[in-house]
Amino acid sequence: MNSRPIDEDKLRSFSGTVWGYKQGEMVSLMIQIGDRLGIYKALYNAGPVTAGELAAKTQLKERWLFEWLRGQAAARILEYHGEDRFELSPEGAMVLSDEENSLSFAAGAFSGGTPPETVDKIVDAFRTGVGLSYEDLGPNAAHRTERMLGPWTKQEFVPRIIPALEGVKGKLESGAVAADVGCGGGIALTAMAGAYPNSEFHGYDPSSHAITRCQQKVDEQGLDNVKLFVAGGESLPADPTYDFLITFDCIHDMTRPGEVISAIRRSLKNDGTWLIKDIRSYPDFEENLRNPFLAMFYGFSVSACMSSALSEPGGAGLGTLGFNPSVARQMVTEAGFSSFTEHDFDDPSNLYYEAKP
Image (cartoon, rainbow, N blue to C red; front, side, top):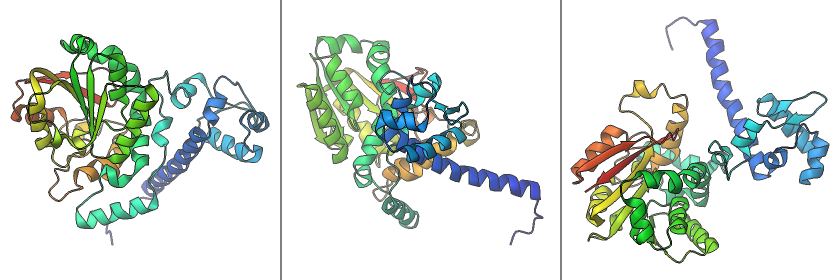
């Protein structure tokens, strides 16, 4: 039993903090429902509406919408205008409705959730030390990651980031061979393949669910310059093959990142470029504490990123915040790269590193 005297004010404050997270869980579920049912899209530019008006527009049941609308107003997500009329603000629409055009879109991060059976396996991992791979996490993990990271990649990668890399755009326009290691659902891969039809693109991911999702995108877009492999970065060609290679938010997920980085070095041509995108973090925990979303990142790490990085005995276990600039520079340099340049493209969650042999 704790021998320190109980401060009643601190007790109330701490209890409020904990229950606030439970409220957040419930609000997250309501956001997921609103996104899945297209309610936020129906509210886009609709002005103040009643549950009845929204029901007529969405073909959903009024009573259910009424309870959902009031809950969203209580969460300060919808504006309340009195007389049971609710409105999604223009700013709210950018965050919750406009997936195609808004860099602030966030509703995709609420897709799915963590099934109880996965929670059971994570609990077990605390005892065994061995986590779950993205293959173990199933198709929803690939879908949620795609929707969470997709807006920035779709809108910024080809038009802004590639042109900022020395010589890369010209090579891709003329005809190059490029690879996306840890390609996931293929947002970056298909964006490149569509923009640069003269080049050939290879996608690698150890998750069959991710490759299936990526293949769907390739087929939907009619791309004939993409080849996909259910394989990790360790399976890259042993000889210099690629002019351009990317790893987006995945090095920290790998059980053997050092081996993958060495494989990338071997497979990259001497005048090639490797673009690394990884979570914006710092070596010092106290510095990271300034990030208001740090607890969320550690939640991602335990439930997915670190879990994946420990999904084999002896895994590196870097985790979501483990591939910070200091670690990245050291590992890339040790693998034989002679050039390492940090880029900040104003991505709120990620930093970018350009490495050359």
